Amino acid sequence: MSVSTTATPDEISAIRRRYLWMATSSVAVDMAFTLVFIGLTGAWSFAPRSLGAGLVLLLAVNYFLSRWLFQPIQRYLEGTTSFEDTQRRITQLPLLTAQNVAILVLILTAFRLTATYFWSDPSLTGIPRPAVAQVITLCIVLPVFYFTYTYFVISDYLAKLCAFIFQHRGRNLELFFGSYRTKLIVALTVISIAPLAAIIVDLFSYEGDRLRLEITNVVGVAIMGMAITSYFITRSLLRPIRILSRAMGKVAQGDLSERVPVTSNDEVGELTGQFNNMVEGLRERERIRETFGRYVDESVASTILHREGQGVLAGEMREATILFTDIAGFTTIAEYLSPDRLVEALNEYLETVLEPIRAHGGVVNTFIGDGLFASFNMPLACPDHAAAAVRAAIDIQRAVGGRTFGTSGVALATRIGISTGHVIGGSVGAGQRMSFTLLGDTVNLASRLEELNKHHGTRILVSESTSTACNGEFAFAALGSVAVRGRSDAVAIFSIDPNSQGKSS
Image (cartoon, one colour):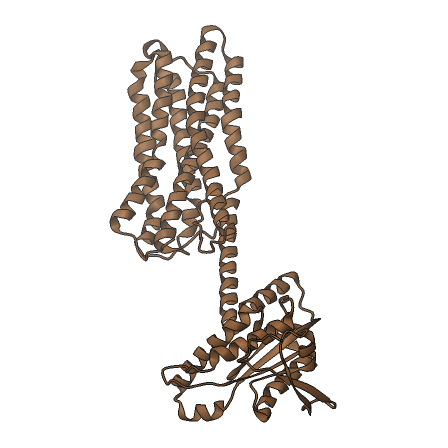
């Protein structure tokens, strides 16, 4: 999701108006409930006072209280305060708004129910006096209902506000005061138990036509309240889960660019924040893997990450074929080329060398100055690894020979040494500096064979073990046995013409 730095004044005003409208929407619900009651009782003379009191408390007073609650958020949206100083108010906005509405409804309910005792003559207004038990019950049930309604309405708004902040500021909630379990309990209580409590009180307080009137009123109001409240409850509780579920599906498909706005102030919001942290960790891991892959073969990086994830960092021994390359006369070339021209030519050369190695199933473990160190069958499996290494060497010589590299047009001749045998592979290092490397006599011998090319005037030298492992596929020329630095016994070496077809007759 793209993130801009600031929101326009019109956008800030629109998001503020939306909050004020939703915070005062309880007045519309109250008017609907009141009209149902007046319609059933026929007490139209009491309507102006009852509806007027509702407009004063739930519209006018609630409007000014809601404006006061939103002021810190508005200052943040306008850029005059920090997110850290504002997010507590953002997180608690549903709770604080619902508390204000519940208190106002308690005052309003007490006024309406006691009016028939102190200010109204039932014979004149037509309003039947409620039983004391009903007064107490409604002074509890109605504030709880309006609290629940307002809480979930503003929670639904909070999702839009958080998405707005995320879009324009790139910030997410990090404080969570809500409880998903508590929300469910309150929602179920208000939807199911509250209407039943009012009906039970009516059953024990009235009889005859008055009982039917009261129960009809309770049922009518309960149906309306349940329909309205259930709508916002499901939106508030289920929408954040749906958003998170869609984001998880995208990540499962490999899209690591997904970042989700935290749109609830409970455990689901906290889970969404942890999801964002997880995806950021995956992105960082992918960046490390991609960066690592620029310096060593990507398959080696993947293998290391896989083994590290499994907790397996111990070494293993396997038969493999090692290939070393080096540029003949590179020191002399470096003396007359400028550093930028030299690096340019070297990079182009290495790209040319890498392609045949990868094409034949090898991996590059390390770049060593002007050369490289590649392996076949370690760490990745490579059938017929000895023959694959020789084919790669022949293709390297054919690709490098007869061409120049870089804008300077410098020719770079390549020497290659190949040896087959048991190799130890594993992650070695200290502290936070680790490297996947290959060890053993086979590695040392391949390096020595590459050096021996300049003494024999050859381009490719292989060990006897490599020649034998190729099973007659290539026409090797035996060069006898030579003493190799680091070994006490002589080693039989073989050369191959890179211009040959690579097949024995």
